[in-house]
Length: 485
Image (cartoon, rainbow, N blue to C red):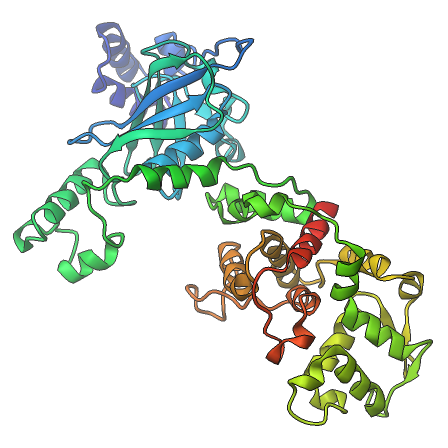
């Protein structure tokens, strides 16, 4: 018996401009059920044909059209020929304005069953074929008029046609959008038919008689539509700003952070990649001796006062005299309310000790707080700074580690301190973490790693520990921890 999927594909071929020979083969196959696959029956080669990689990289000026849209929705792009298909996918998404929340497929012809390239997701589902990852644009197009097809969202069926308008003498240094028309349709609007209904309703000035039937009322429709969506709107600056994000090269990362970035990219989320591609993410990963001394000051004060070891109180706290000296010398006394001579009543001092312990600088044994062997080896501020870097991020639980890596990425990108928590929380939300049982509530950005970065940024000398602005030395510290992996 034929596979039902093959029957469906053949039936679709019948209404997709099949030639007489293919129609005849279809009818014979359906009546006799004597076939194993469409491609075997039609005598087609399923694998796409690739051109040799040219000796020199060429550039292309190409027009990208949303096939079937009226009025036309299109973008004109300048593309380097060595652009791989996954990167071209990013370019199409960004220039059109899609959210990359559905599956996609590149194929070589208009026919939906033309030879196509498989994605990593296809392979994970057990499909065979030519993987798109290492295929370049200039292996598929070479001359004016050559075209490539791209389908996005197999449910709505957004088909795009990329056709070469001109082969450029030199490959552009980056991708650019040089023209276009019309806004991208809203995601999940029901394909061309749903898009045309929405566009007609908006163009009518939201005439109630033209409200698409899928909505209960105008309020429901406005809540669903993207904010200020206008089908006739297109801004080339917006397209190029989006392109700049997806073509920017992120810093090279490995280990846990690389795994997190790959996980998000598989979901079509580029938020972590965007952070890692920020210009300052490519900045220095070293600090001067003076900067190391400033950054490590709270820990050096603690180690100096602890000396070879200090006996804790019966409740396990630092002696009041030590607490008072830490608070005075580190700047906490200047803004803290109270005497700042009890660790249990002075959280900023307690945090210094907790972080020093988490960083492997002090340990508690038999009621005494003592420096670790690693701390003793740190003879100067630079050595202490390097030790701290080697221990980041802090924590063992998944949430702590992922929040820690997110913090290092955000701080390393040069984000101002007042934006750290918001950006980290957004990354954690993208990674699947939530606040309680509310699936729409972003999680807290708090983590031992973020506490350590705030302390390095001078939290003990800031009123209520609120650090602000960009501290380039702290950013370099975060980048050093990221690059170390």
